[in-house]
Image (cartoon, rainbow, N blue to C red):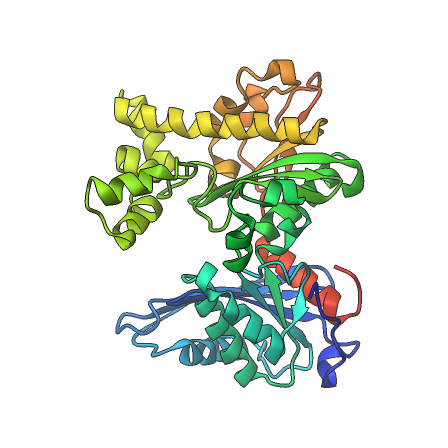
Length: 419
């Protein structure tokens, strides 16, 4: 199952329907944006958090037609159904109700699509069943995604609901990159392989990098570095992912805010046998008490840099380990691609931490990579080059836009156009 062609449904597929509501449902939160795909403009955005608690909070920001004042609700929101009802009320207050004939689709971020979903997909019972079947390999994410989907389907059963999968962009990896070197029968029986994540970001940024270079995605090889609290790298050859750093789960790869990234698997055996730690305790250690926070107690790069400036050696070591791993992946993916046209930094750290970009590229001049200090120091929300003109390989900062990518793919599907 690589994707499903949408069927016109009532007014949703009519000529006047140009809006897409994007939902990113977490276990206790819902992030949302409403976009008009005629010009990719944002009409509204918001966040519902602490769902199921007495201290639930909804923050809604009208953005279209000149925008308006941010509105906030506090108080108990019992579940995702109540959260989406509250979102619908806020949108209706701005004249953007979910009953509008201008709404073409609801696009859902789904973290894990396994191998069966390599494209945006219209959600039906079979798709829901497959997303549920993948819960064991995405226990923290897919259940929450399913809850958001089912709630939205109850709210608007007549409207196309589109799943856009974090893993989809990485399904083009060759088996040589996707397979782990373990017993094949065991791996296949338990769906153990490298899937990769942050796919919507890597897809968007690699395409925008090509545009920045004035070329088509098919003509460009790009190393994308998505550096946020979660971090991943990808090697994109002619618009197709051929390798990525995250694996069966988002734990593999780069040093992250709270995740260890690459580690000798025997560390887990050692901790179990020698330290007496349970599987759950090791899981918490590697996912929530490792990475930058495990190394120095902070996972905010701004705070780490402040501590470095004050002479904090522990913060400096954490930064150096972070950069060392990053440079290893740049070099590895350079070898995988053979020819690199650009290295693109994105996400919170990648877009805003000039010292990270400078340190990651420093010393790679023999690979054609360099950073211009003045260009690198400029803060901007626009995609831009930070490499000097003489550099053989472009270095870019490309702000990611996963919501726009989800909306674009969803709208293209319901309009019967390839995303």
